[in-house]
Amino acid sequence: MFTSANSYPIKVLRNPPIKNGKYFPVCVQLWLTNRCNLKCPYCATQARNISDELSYSDIKEIAKIISALGTKAVVLSGGGEAILHPYIDEIINLVVASGIKVGLITNGILLKKLRSLNSLEWCRISFDDYRIFAEEKYIFEPIIMQHQHVDWAFSYLITDNFNQANFQAVLDFVLKHDSITHCRITSDVFNPVEYDKIPNLNSLPKCVIREPNTNVSSGNNPCYMSIAKPLIAANGNVYGCCEVLQYLGFNASTKIGHYSELPNIIRNQLFFNGTKCSTCNFSEYNKCLEAYDPRIEIKHLNFL
Ligand code: SF4
Ligand code: SF4
Image (cartoon, rainbow, N blue to C red; front, side, top):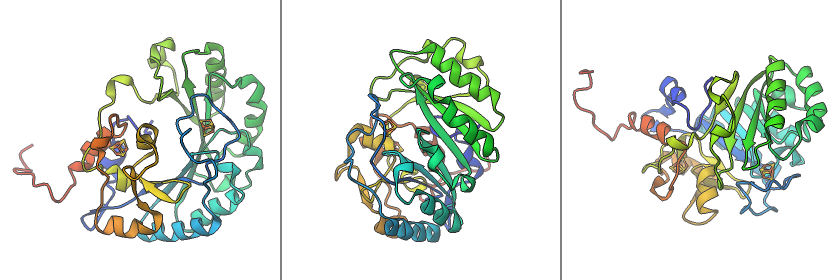
């Protein structure tokens, strides 16, 4: 199972995001809107301005810019809930028509509204200890059954009030459906809990653990991931990742530029200085990407 943050960086080893000696945004994380239909107590993006939303013409411009830069994949996430954007279907179809694959992270409640599900590569539904899976299962099951070519996944956020029965209900559902590839287990970023709340976690099938608390270190300068996988937020600005916003907020020190400046950011390789980030879930990715930096001389390369 090859996911991204906190996993062995197999994807950048297999497919280094470098063209003509320069790093480029192979994957872009896009926040369409900051509005949300839930108020999760652990929400990592509470500091966002709820009224920020990218317009359809912003998205058209973004699709043009990133496709020219060589972007291959876009992850729609939040921020808020992407399906609340009034042009969500048009946006998914537009990005796909630009030759870019789209993955969606959603709380799942509005999935029935989504007419463009067939255009998605994958869709991950976020779940947690507070929402009772037995009460919402009826929303997801028919949609997953009807769209089996989409790679489905769940994430489950565990809190201090770990709800073992609820987690088990999600896991049983994941195991029941072949089109659900995995369940990603995560923890409240501001109030991390130990994963040992989940008995026998390491031997649970189809489970991927994010943020093992032992494997987090501070950020890198340069942060290669800020160019390989930048975040374009609903205010139109570019950031190194969502993690940096959780800890340092939306301000001049975290902003890399406006999305219209992306071509210049890539041309001049204006990496974010990650030393400001006290924790970084992409530190392994950054270490690996450093090995491709043409500015760093590595002597005796053939002496393995
Ligand atoms: S669904 Fe996501 S964006 Fe919405 S409140 Fe919950 S954590 Fe925050
Ligand atoms: S936490 Fe900081 S160093 Fe790490 S990927 Fe995000 S912006 Fe880069």
